[in-house]
Image (cartoon, rainbow, N blue to C red; front, side, top):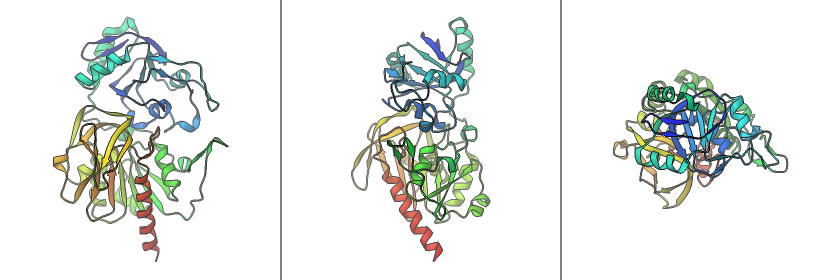
Length: 375
């Protein structure tokens, strides 16, 4: 059973691990990329309901993981496909989750659940055996709300050296490994960073070096990086005191900075903005955003439950992108310094890939800054 803290119960069949799973229930509208989704550290603490009917069709493989292991608390699907249909598959989704201790449930009415989340907002829930529904209800109600949760320090650490590769090749089923020995260095402040971000940097001739959440200005000074990236990650940005304090110091300098998702929110808070909890968040790969400067509309990948209040944007920044679904802030740009952010995922793993130019702009800024420093 899936038991919501509000008392609703959805019946289905279990798969994956057998122990109960508890977390915030959210829905994701992506049609592809379930493995990237379940291994994305930004989903830590959440039970993810996939609105796509069939999940598991192409199995799982090592290359498509966005972290070392599944990060979701649990997975909710309409129908789990146990027969894999991909030459790249190394196993099936059910076994992958079971090995990681992650529970799933299939066969329930995911459309009804999604409608419930849209109307009533994200809710805590528990996946548990039918005989233990009452215990599941209590576990769901005891689960801390996502607002106020600092999960960034718990997210899996990025192995930047292992993730640093360029484009994937169908001929070899491998990522290219560019030569980065003398490349400009980017310090990646890891709040739960996806491997795809490191690949995007490496593919543009930048060497990513991961620093853990809680890194200090002294750590950055020792690295002497040419650029800084504030990564994605799970939870509420407001309790991230260490990261926000560090970003306030970074804003005093001129080192090129790109902030993604949770990093975007932390950047805005450090600059004086305010964050709000969204009703049910943005989770999926079909979210249209508009770039105000060019008027161009792009489809983006999104995964966040908090947003920056547009009225709180400090004077030094301007809103660069907005959501065409609900008008929420999707990007910020400093008016005079090389600082930019995006609420969605320009690395888009899974796709679409229309926002990748954010990395092109960042790479150009970092390269120029590196050349100036080396003169």
